[in-house]
Length: 136
Image 1 (cartoon, rainbow, N blue to C red):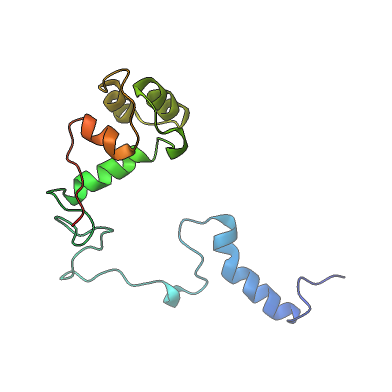
Image 2: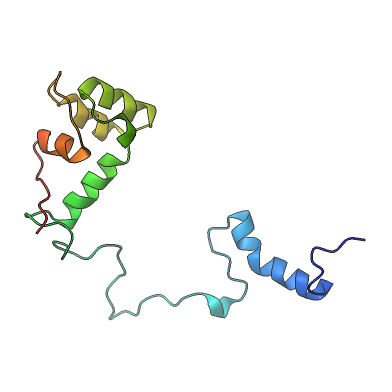
């Protein structure tokens, strides 16, 4: 009979297997074996936890970009591989379609002027009429 580990006994191996079962199976509740290890939700008088604070982000982007605009540009850029740049509107749309971009990204790319090469995602974003990011 072969054991999973020669470092621990069978009982400890079984406990460790139970603790990681959620991660191995991809359970949406997480891999915590004991209920007391789950983080507590925020209280009624506490603000909801968000990935980005409201309003402009300090230190990163300036020039009037809001957190929503930064998030939108970031999502837009995930569907265009940087390895194809510089590229024109036709190549950008084909790449976005190959990367299974949502309709709103493809619609934005349809508005680009034809025959003009774009060196960066920021150039594409500005050509679509959105705000540019300026570093201070």
